[in-house]
Length: 99
Image (cartoon, rainbow, N blue to C red; front, side, top):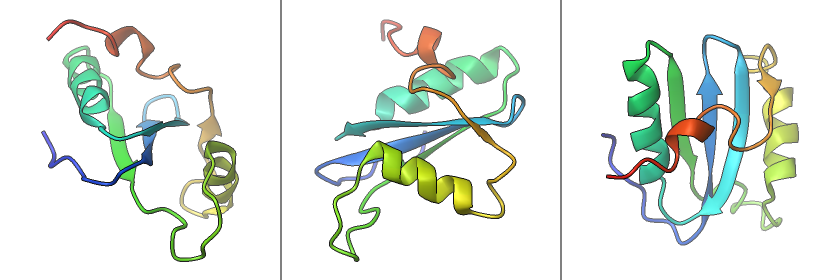
């Protein structure tokens, strides 16, 4: 499992490489449940990326919202091919598994 970031509050980007979808989850203070859910999804043969977006936008001093991150993501040339889906759609069934 990747090292968990220690930001007070941040968002998590979940990308389903197979379906070419992404969601912005959070804000949260711990992304470990998304990494566990990704591991479970990968056992089913899915290709999922989970990335913590800690400190996103903090340099500009502007408030960070999930909607703002979505809009910025859709402007990125290497991510334009992805469709935005609501939080929980990609890893939903894996998010609340018992440890």
